[in-house]
Length: 183
Image (cartoon, rainbow, N blue to C red; front, side):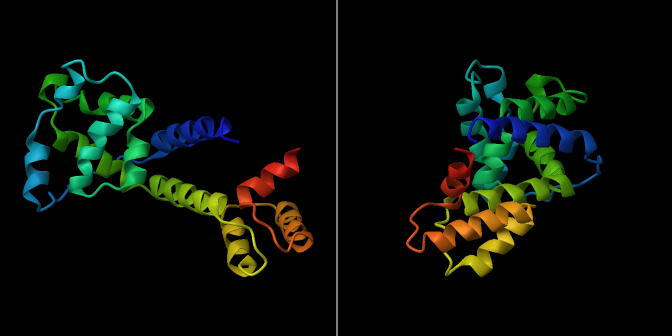
């Protein structure tokens, strides 16, 4: 399941970018002084050689936490595919040497304002919650709602419930339970 996740993520991201309607949005600048200083800074990492891989990109994107980005945003926009797509749009109007963190932040905020991004974020966070939660009949009434929100089939939901009934002292997470069905 871990090897398929990047491909699913990439597919969703590309689909979402191609279907996202370009909205004219004005980003209200956050009020913190540190954020304002950062937003006025050039994207030097794009031209000074420090932009070499996704970990260096995530490091740069994480600087925008000061302006309100969360950990999900950093991971989502800290991917080469994401940056590539945003750079294509940003460099239509400016040279790469002229780009600032405000340009990047504005592009990120435009994408975050789409319903596609909101849906991807919701599904990803629900999946993560379910994957790390220990399966239990005590919590089943809440957990079944997560399965349903994620679009799990009745068959899968039934199999999980049967597993929990036959293993009342279960210690596995829902992800581990689902993986055991594949064996």
